[in-house]
Amino acid sequence: MTTMSPGIVQSHTGMDAIEWNILGQTYVPKSKTDDCFSWHATLPPGTFVPPHIHPDQDEYLYILEGRFDFLLNGVEAFGEPGDLIKLPRGIPHGIFNKSDQTIKTLFWVTPTGPLYDLFWALHNLGPEPSPAEVVSIAAAHAVDFLPPGKSK
Image (cartoon, rainbow, N blue to C red):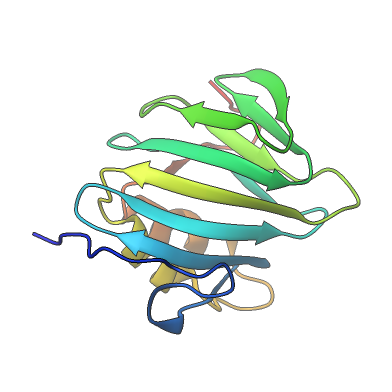
C-alpha cells in the first residue's frame, strides 16, 4: 500500500521531476497513493481527450485557466476557472479545448488503479500515434474509449 507523505509540491514541479507528453498535452503528476492520483495538465488549443469511460474510477477536474468543453453522458457542457468537474465512474465523458487559449487544470482520480501506468505507456507515443494503438493501450489500463460518434 502506498501512503502519502506530508509536504508541499511546488507549483512548477511534480513527483520525481516527471513530465509526460500525452498526445500533445503535458501532464505533471503531483501525488499518488493507492487511493488517489492527481496531476496538473496543460492542454494546448485544439487538443482533447476523446469520449471514454473509467469503469472503476471517479475523475475530477479543477479548472485553473481557460475554458473546457465537455461531453458528459451525451450532454454538452463547459467549465471555466474555479469550476469543479465531477466525472463519476462508468459515465462516458470527453474533454475538449475548442478555444484558442491554453487550458490548465488539476485532475485527480480515485482510486488510482492503473492510470499512472497508462500515462507512462502513452508518454511520447509518437507524433502520429495510431488511434487503434492508443485505444488498445488504454483498454489494457482500464480506460475504455468509445467508438467515434458514441457518447452514451
